[in-house]
Length: 170
Image 1: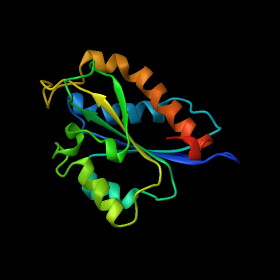
Image 2: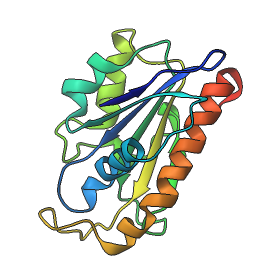
Image 3: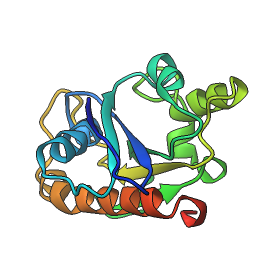
Image 4: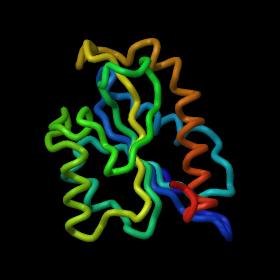
């Protein structure tokens, strides 16, 4: 976990990246690692965390007053490999709502957080399209590896937007 404190006048943003250390499902973790390696701008406050089981960890770490981005892999079959889609909780597609490789799925975790009063007012899911035939024990595919830099820039840009304009972010 890496935390960058916000400068005066900006808001902290939490980024939770789900995945595993293996295959295309590791895209969230690889993106978090990249965000933790690059020199981040000092005008935003970020807390970037890698998580593997949403139901066990996400509900504990959510902060209702902190805008939150959740990054996870998605298999929709509708988007190009490595594309990034943004969803609110009410827009969450079936691909992310069902049980996942993480045990209970992301939707169940967010519903639990909501029931416990821990769901942030601003909570966006950033889903990265992966290959449904990805080998779970294999490496990250070359296409996704090549998309890491632009994906991290997209996530960082969205975090900046949330930090500077939280009331207009959605």
